Image 1 (tube, each protein chain N blue to C red):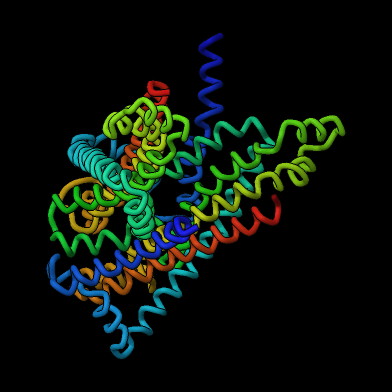
Image 2 (image 1 turned 90 degrees about the horizontal axis):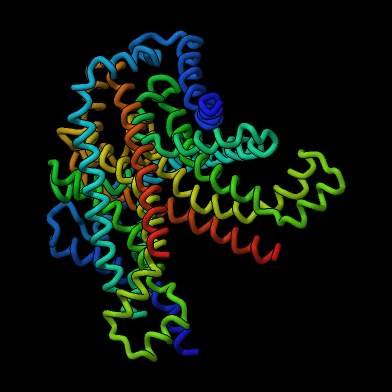
Length: 249
Length: 251
């Protein structure tokens, strides 16, 4: 009993140790002036307008990431369903997903800025990243229905669409939620890459401009906000997944 | 007959490549983009084909940076993973911290490391290595812990030393997880190297890309994007082949 309580304490200790380490390295300037103590980063948010700026950027990134998450998920679901309804398209779809995954998102950002525009780019890049993760998760999920269930549907002469709706989509739900837990942080990454190249607002813009102008506390505030957003997305979807598993198991 | 069949299989597997090129061309033509906004694919392929010599040095540089970064990051992660493996307490404390660091978006980590280490080529390597470190570390720790209880009992009963148990039992069971980590991380290494080159580097595809963009050489910029994509796909395919070969060898 005491052992398990202790084990539950480890992660908390780990995170506390990380925070203390970051603070100590900054306090004694062990890594130079570009590593400020955490307390100083937090204090810098008290400057007039600073908290406002960070929160506004955080909001812009969160909105772009969320829109990309929805868009990418919808496209991936359509793609994976198409692969089932039209089996001949399937090998090609897998290749397409692998290629889309491998496209270095940095290569697309500036090109999309010229064409999709500054506002839309973060969302589109987030959607691309999310799309691949969700496609892979759903492709394996849609095939996860048990052989016996498949046979029942075959014997009863179910149409492909009915089979998809009544059997394969429900069977894919756990995979779908697993995919979302991975796709959440991917959406944040995609949105910030899009912003690096000159979106009107967002954490990505703030990070790059703070880096170039040597505004160290601002750089760290923005980087920490992006990390928090990414962690939040992960924790949120992991919780949903655990709850759903409990509901359906 | 077999030739016809292999053409058909090729078509079945690779139609998306053709589709992407056609859609790209249509998109440019329908929207009426000029050369300075988005070139047509043919112009881009022509630029790559005619100036292979311009691309190769930067391509090689990015490839070396990605692979070296992946190698260094993996090595460090293995050492650290084995270091925390001995003690449940240490791994219980360190792993969540590594998970938190793993969720730092690359886009947030690169500028911070660039400021810390200075703007030069060794920073590009360091960034790639650090970014590869965290996923491999997390997978190594869980892989080392996944050895079966009966296996551990056997080694304990036979009085095997810790080093032997580590080498013959835990490392072997960890190999598949480590290889999964390398496969997942390989395209990320290319992305990280390119992002770092774009921001601070003086060589590499990321740098070529940023120069082409600032001189408005759109054929070159899009050509770099195509070459980078090919590099990234090849890295992924290579890592997957390596994973299959290694896992087949140990299991």
